[in-house]
Length: 314
Image (cartoon, rainbow, N blue to C red; front, top):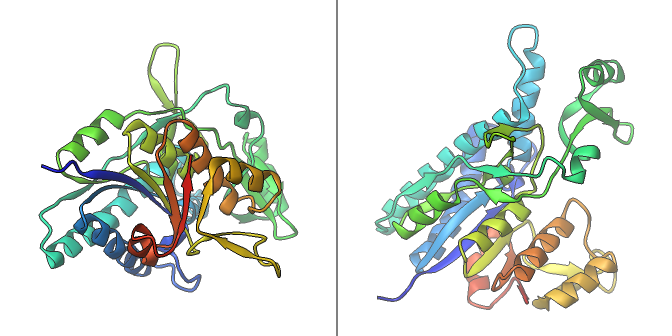
């Protein structure tokens, strides 16, 4: 029997909202169905795929609902908002994959692992919260929240926005269960939104923290932990470019870790956009990863056939 190839495929949270005018749950499910149809094609071609996903907009919606109902209901902590989105987005992905498998005659079951990811309580990110979450508030409301211990920054005249730490992932708590599910032939959705950030207390118990883990770094860690053959980071573009948006823009078919580090140093990749994706891939490859691919969901199968996408190799 031929050994199956295993891939970790990271889907951006914004892939669930392709149009800012279409943010409803049915709209998000339509977007998920589209993405899952491309992933099902990869599974049909013989890959075992572990799907990870972002959750930025969805966490934002939960926090906004919490803000609007504070006079009636308790606030929702960040770790619970993350867990909530893992369940909801996982449910959409499971349903879409089941329907796609049925249509294609694939005998597989998709399931979601609500995933905790351990971070270091001493991570410097906790001293410098910088990841924006939630909606824009006026100065008076922001200062009220700051008095309660939350951190806010003014954002380019658009109002005040909460910022939380973004520590690096250290350990995926449920990784052994994820491995067993892959070995059992399941299509697994895990590490949603980068995982629910937890720290280990002195007595060994886990405690959730108000933070956001970058989903691409968490996906890279998962790929290393399960010895995946491939890490795919799907994004809004078909390939990575250097000199993006300039006259001398160049789309890349392949780059090595050394080239990627050079391009990072030269400032080719935008912070908060392509930069963390390339940084996560570099870390994955330096820690034993085999190869990585960046492309958009509709082109995943073409990229795997060598027709498009950007391949990053050690």
